Image 1 (cartoon, rainbow, N blue to C red):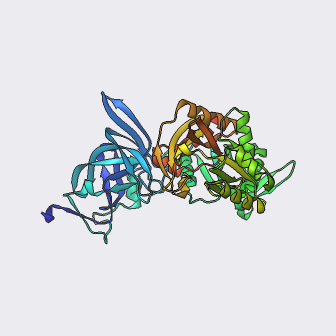
Image 2 (cartoon, rainbow, N blue to C red):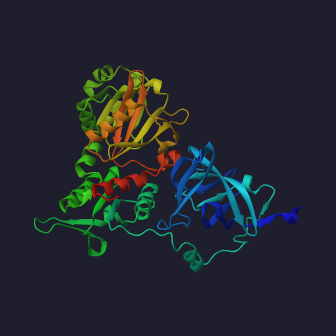
Image 3 (cartoon, rainbow, N blue to C red):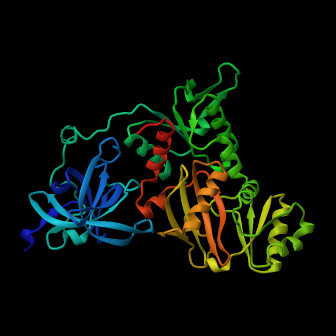
Length: 456
């Protein structure tokens, strides 16, 4: 019986002839139950009265120019918990696996695996009864040379459409930044990562310039995507303004980013647009503490640092005494704070609606860890797919418009009074929402730039 089984190493090359993938490197993982294939632009459709799904794949790791358009019969939709802890709904296909000298049908889920080391994961359900794994070995069935790969994929590279796009950010290894770079390259654009700290400016009425490390002059950019950390908002927005002075299109403007980072000012702008928020108080003197607490309905309440991000600087004060202590402690440090009513019925959940170019392109529900009231993914919160109501979508779109943001992460909480807006983020992260929804949100951001240049 053992003689009939194929022996595989921890990594092997295989192919999927029915969906047009001539070869792909797979991680062989008996610890994973299901198999998964990297896929983006996933869309179900009807073919001959049956459910099918179409999707794109970059079969070669770190090569986003090579694209294969695939379609396959859809056999199921399942909730899968990924290795990063996200619960996501995935489409499931069945297709023929060709590995070594053997072929058999396997089921695979489709998911964006850009943050993973392999485009393909071969799980134990697909291997059961057919495979033995030697984890100390690799490529026991052989591997293609770089020349073989070029020949196999010679007709699958996208041509450049000519846009030169800069991603103005701090960390090129961050998931969101990598995805934006890949999405731009996949759509045929020339992408450049520009580290904010390595840019400097020449202020001149006739010849304003932006220089990069080594004295390189950054010119002839068509568009810039600012992804500015809160800690460098001032300098990042100054650079964005300089690009605007050079008539470079910026996906989010310097003015929009600046006002979105001022939590008090942004809430005032949102209220002027008729958008409901939790009752909020702001004061500059510790002498006003008691009235400030009454203003928001008493304890429990939330105390927020104006400069806080990703749930940092946000404290739940469960009693009046605790609230007084927290407020006075922050005030003694000359910190600017907001005091906000606590929405108990939300049960540690909120919604993140991702708005691009005036449309809600994806929504997730974020849920806090047990014993935690903040639902931020960075603090261990989990993400799941949820369908927003029409009112929630309207609020998100109006909020992005009020802040003049082309790209925005809008956080909404469900209360007994209806949906309330918590915050608008001008550089929302992509990992949680792309992982949960399987949507190519980075691609939507690139499309928004293309629309500005009237590219199809």
